[in-house]
Image (cartoon, rainbow, N blue to C red; front, side, top):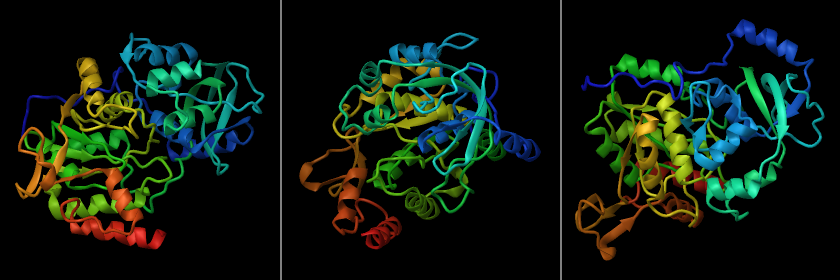
Length: 394
């Protein structure tokens, strides 16, 4: 094992932010929350509450105020008491027009669509933003067909700063088990228990395929271990459900990886599809989870044709030194029939006539047509899970 690196520090602060009460505190606070004004939030905002409270969004202690949000939108810098730090996406609390409590300093309870109190905290001043400028700066488009832009516009243009006191309930889970939901502090403890000093994170929202496997294994070679960290919060309606994807990751890890060098855990964030900006956002969060490196591949966090193939790699290069987590950049990986295995554009001749190009979009299209993904695309155990799901859901 390597011994040159110390565990990574939390982003922009001395230690992880924690707004997770113990059970006795939680019970008392839940009782008191019943008397507070209730502010309705979406499932996406509930995910942000959890990531603020568990420290994944350190140094944030709540939802951004106007100054912070505007600075992030304009310059990817977040003002903090210790100075500016790199931050890529605004983390905002939309406020419905029907919510009448606007007094700064008022304690309120945030309630999700299932009428569960997610968090309590102190309300700040209301503010508005130029949403078209926001969309163009963060998503590089104002096209309403972009899922991130659509979510932004649907939430309205009324926001509140909010200092989060405590997370009282976890957001709704679409998985049947909580065993994969490790908070940053728990993830860091497991990394330490394993004696890893270098850990590479792998982000995905798609079922894992041979290109993913190839990239992960290449990244693992010089490092101590990998955190396979699929995003399991809200995604597009046509994305494959989180529980199906987790079964795919389990099958691949069990059959094709050294389990002593792999951690499989869930990242409970919503997807923004913000391309390059979201790549930086993902790196910050994985740094807080204790990772020293992160894989940035083709079209990271992209959707449609809104971003160039390697735009995310270009952007992360400009801020990597300030982030304190190393991007591992990879070319497009494909299956070469000529080479009888996975290759990248950098490592082998790629001839269209004997190449299988791999992507999450391709597997979704196959499944929608009732086709079993071939062995060149994904491992047979993964294909079994996917075709079973597609058959049941059709």
